[in-house]
Image (cartoon, rainbow, N blue to C red; front, top):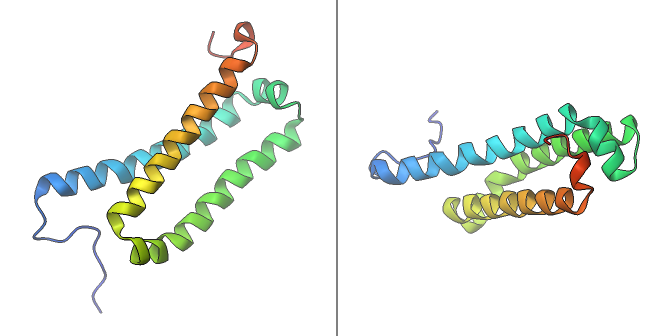
Length: 115
């Protein structure tokens, strides 16, 4: 039994490096979002007008979204191609970060946990 590999052996090293960068960038963004929400939970509770239960649900939904993505990524990659799948994932993460930044700048600037 042969296991599939992420990059073909005859692919140039530069292409493999770009692919690896996008994969690790996606994991970095996902992990960072969970860390930020859990570390600054009191600030996000005020921002989202919720309690600790609501913050726990957000963190759980991030994990559930990751689980669903992992389960569907193979099919999506087969249908649209590996490169397109990674590009769509990266664009989705960038939109997530921009929206998160816009949301925090709309909030009271003086009460940011990073100030």
